Image 1 (cartoon, rainbow, N blue to C red):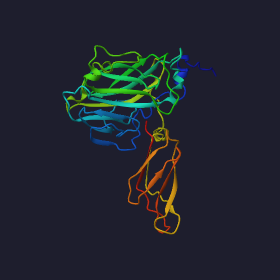
Image 2: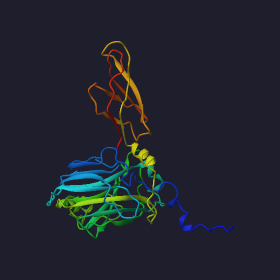
Image 3: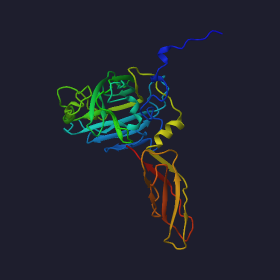
Length: 341
């Protein structure tokens, strides 16, 4: 039997291993909620790992959408932002940004700060009722002195899915710190007041000491009308100067990656009392499904029993609180462990 020669273009570091530096780029994990209305604050609202940061640029309905998707691409979900209250005249400091932050320990193979710094390619599917110029910003958050660059893309046709690809050069001068902190931040600007957009030209290469007003030059104001919306899915950031097909992970693998930053458990969580009086304490360990980024902050949806938490490890946390006559204390309805960037 004749051997088939493997295409050399398909055998490279770019296509082996986990390529996508983002987590949950296909929006399939949404532990907190699938929709939230009238959002005016900065938070992780619906799909895991994707944060909306809003500084007085309207209010928004944020959801994981199952019906508006790029045809034939194999995506089951998109992130949808729908303008609920408009702001047609932004104050100078107003902005709306959708973003993800990446830990430094996951960036060392990019070789930033050396002569071998790798190119990066960002690809994504996007759709909006509002056409025009949009900005994506790359932010190296090195504590020795951050560097940023911005690139533009255009939504050409209203209410139509379009695939965008952006390639940037690696930075040979400043590396990413090898920490579990946010070292690379990628911002999708959606609205920007003059503080961020009023400069003469866009800062489109790695620079430090950048004037704020060059960060989002040309950005349309997505918040200017309640008919505006913005959808995105299939978001991938990878080494190299070409966009490869979107990296597909199983639901279980994607969930585990998300649980490093946020873990939610529902149902009965019991803990047994020690001692004989009503004011003695009881305790129990809750094992986490994966090692979290940092010691989590734990909260409880049922506070009737005065439960407290001791977060002494990134792989488990401890429940303790007042027991009743050495009996098992009340179960919790829902527990949240958070170690977001």
